Image (cartoon, rainbow, N blue to C red):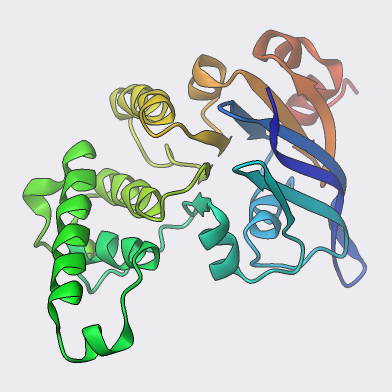
Length: 259
């Protein structure tokens, strides 16, 4: 399989603190990979580096789409999103005063281009594009079982539905690489099981590569083909689920060392 994302010696310093240090990470096309580690290990910082929230202090990020490779280090979040990387957030960041449907429509509009005059004067090309965006957005909501709530304000959704809406909004940007930051946070075991099945289905249906941060080890071990383990900003292990579970460094990072 060909790499879709290659991270080489990625580093981010905040003053004298190295939040992420010399991280090497590779995702191949179509993989579902986990990034795990204790609280404060630097996992969300890695996501913020990959999506342009922070520029790297050192190292490179290379993203490949349609056989075209592009460096991402230092690019703005909107440019990285347009390149084909979508994400959700650890702390939900919906447009809470907009409707469920409008949250998805806004994300999908970046994929449509029509002349400025057409939008200004509401000409037929604009009306046609807007109708298509609305229809495609409703289809994404249907997939996430949110179509019946399309006209509700996002802030009024139950917590689990807000998580699903974030995934729908990320999918609306038409990514080839999807970054999921703790999608199961706050969910009960039944909801987590449904989510794991949904993530696996979305990968196949939308031909996605997925990088997943998650603290629910049951979910991670069930669906991730490979796992990277981060501790204090450093990759301490990588491999399949059984390999990672038996790694002494991983056990020490989570449980501590014997006194």
